[in-house]
Amino acid sequence: MAKRFQAPKGTRDLLPPETAVWAAVEDTARRVFGLYGYREIRTPLFEETELFARGVGEGTDIVGKEMYTFTDKGGRSLTLRPENTAPVCRAYVEHGMDRQPQPVRLFYVGPQFRYERPQKGRFRQFHQIGAELLGGKGPESDAEILLMLVRFLEELGFLKLQVLLNTVGDAESRTAYREALRSYLLPMKERLSEDSRRRLDSNPLRILDTKSADEQEVLAGAPALADSLTPDSRDHFGRVLSSLDAFGLRHSIEPRLVRGLDYYTNTVFEIVSEGLGAQNAICGGGAYESLIAELGGPATYGVGFAIGEDRLLEVLPADSPARRVVPGPVLVAAMGNVAEQVVEGVRGMVRIVERLRSAGIPAIESSARGGRLFELAERLGSPFVVFIGDEELAEGSYSVRNVSTRAQERLPVEAAIARLRQSFP
RNA sequence: GUGAGCGUAGCUCAAUGGUAGAGCUCCGGACUGUGGCUCCGGCCGUUGUGGGUUCGAGUCCCAUCGCUCACCCCA
Image (cartoon, helix red, strand yellow):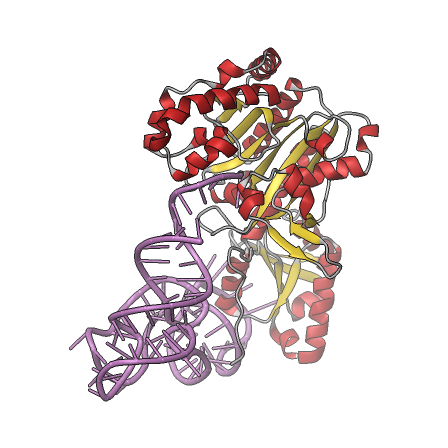
């Protein structure tokens, strides 16, 4: 027997009927984001490696060890996109979108790639739904995009969501805090893990969100980032919070929330969910004030989020509108002599099925008989079975049977089609 | 990159170190103007892969690959 293949490690096939839920979630995103004036952008699945190295940050895990990087036949170093914010900003700069009316509101839907060991809620190819607001004014942009994010999740049936919020300050605040934190931790270096000790030099802020109980204890007496904020950053965060309050958007401040991408400044946020094991964040985001400038564009304020679609689907409420079952195709079955006129019978069936399709009714023919026909209808989710026999052919009618109520009527063709259409808006 | 658990048919699972099985699914037939069937028959395995121990390995050992979970980190 020939070798059998399987999807590469960390990737998976999405199969029906689950794909219908994915499509419904994405449709909801397009609709809700559209309500806020966001339009879709589709960037390449791969970019110059340098874009992510500079944009996401050399010190991040993503760049340090998780990139799918390859050299093409022209000797270029390319990388499968591990996230979509840097590509969107690249496109903003490349296409001179700073000359469009500001701010520019964009959203994206698509696969991202990170070379990691798979586990619950983590894949090498995963999917994100995200949005970026570029060229905005600052705190009010942050609040706007959070409002949209929460509305989207609520429309999917998530209730009582809590947004975890924090500020990491601007560059000046962070420099000040980095020093304060280092001075505090340095004397207690022995109590830190190897990783954390390394971060003491490279990225001390990252030590804050450690999960180790022992390190949490060490951190209990650490200086607060809030105390190192510049007046500007303090004001920024205050305005975000007051906007959210004004909009009635529930949130909680998590002083330890630090995100792993270098480009974030000031506002950062996360939405977490139960039922995902250790990978509990379904959405993360924040503001970035210098990314676009670092990519060669004008100084531009940006804020955005990315939702992990795979994780979102994992915890999607059972009663989510996105799970609404889409009806299967109407089954068309020949009866009596019609069924026995093998060749002409089949062609006649196809003509009838095509007629239904032309009227916008999904339909397939079936050669199943008796109980098997209805078993098939159940499995496909078909709301109706249409019977065509000699009598129907003679008088130009279809017998339409409702699978769930078992009610059956013989109707003139046009009336039958009108009846069937009611189930397929 | 590190650690742990698990790999038997498409799915769910059996098989004391002694002939690889069952149910479901799928396909074919009986049945052909009506219900979730019934009956008959059939396909499906180098027991993830490769070595080793043994008279004999699905079972024990080693390696490898894969899956799962966790660490790290993130969505």
